[in-house]
Amino acid sequence: METPDYKGLYLKVKTDKKTKTLVAAVFCSLVVLALFATLYSRSVLEVSVNGEKLGNVNNNQILTAIKKELKEEYKNKLGADVEFVQNIKAVPVKALGQKLDTEDEMLKKLESVLTYRLKAVAININGKEIAMVKDKATAEKVLEQVKDYYISETPGELIKLEVVEKVKLVERYVYPKEVITPEEAKDLILKGGVETRTYEVVQGDSLWSISRKESIPLDDLIKANPQLKSENELALGDIINLTEVKPLLNVSLVKKVTYEESIPYKTEIVKDDTLWTWDQKVKQPGEKGSKEVAAEVLFKNGLRVSETVIGEKVLKEPVTRVVARGTKAEVAFRGSGRFLWPTVGQITSPFGKRGREFHSGIDIAQSKGAPVRASNSGTVTFAGWRGGYGNLVILNHGGGIETYYAHNSSITVSVGQQVEKGQQIAKVGSTGRSSGSHVHFEIRVNGSPVNPLNYLNK
Ligand SMILES: [Zn+2]
Image (cartoon, rainbow, N blue to C red; front, side, top):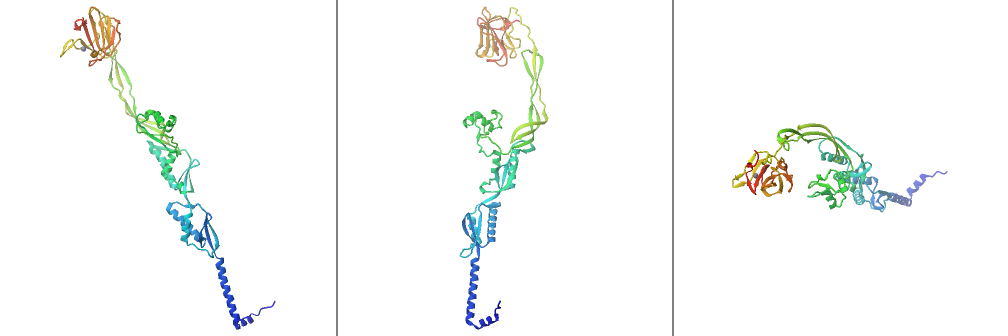
């Protein structure tokens, strides 16, 4: 191989001006070409979302910075991490002839087309997602509020709380509209998501009438209101459910509850020989006692299910009611030809003038229910109500003689009946114009009242 003679070429160039110019031209062209080639081969990133070109940025670092800034911006605004729903596509393209976006321009373009999902927390009950809330702390607060609701709705001191269902909190990205407020989540769990309709009890309502008014089968109405044990518990202004409420969480509480309960009194009967056999008297009125009961009560979703009494303390002993029952038997009445006393007792008002009035008989005090006896044998000519006399019996004894027995509590004979002397014809009372129970007794001769004391045996 032949070695080129560099020295000769150099000398030649140095000496040849024409050649010198040519070399310079070639050199310049090469530089321009190189510059041009560099420019031509340089690339930028073309950014598109869902196939729609948005513009160009210089490089990936800028795009990454923009994305980061956007996410920060949302996070500050929404208080949660976000992810973009759409894919941001970035493809390198030749820079030549392309307009380059500033960082700010690209950010605005992306912001206008991108939608996002928030990082939120799903409350999962028995494997079913039932509500999406902002974050874990919110979810935990909602669950606490549900428990607190049942605790505050029931009386007593909490011993045990149990949630039947398995609850899990799961973090995931969701659309903003899927996230509900803590209040909504609490309501959803307590009411089971069914829109609850209620009704306010008005005068004269019964479950049956409400069922007709609202066109709801009675059975459904009863199911929707387990708190009502009987119709008697419907009170004016009560709010009752028209739809059954099925909470998503079943919360069981055991609470120690103390309450006061009354103790009924006993009745004791004692014999009293100062009273007639038909008589009784309350010697001592009964009084209810009271006790404090402590019980462990089981509540399910706020409703009392069962209770176990764990202690009782008597606050006040009951007072026994004592009733005296009479044992004094009547002495048998026997006829002696004269008239019998219809009952034995004190004369509280004699025959004759009484102030401006005239008392046509005698009043004999006797307790209510005692027998009134026929003063002599005869026929019942009247047995019934007569004005001021109240329940009246009139007997006709023949020979123009009649006897009257007034103010009876009841009558035991009827008109036309023949009665024997001493036979019971009525019971003592205080009907008609009367104060206190007594027998008003009259004897009439040819229709005119006479003083009975002149006829009665002594
Ligand atoms: Zn009288």
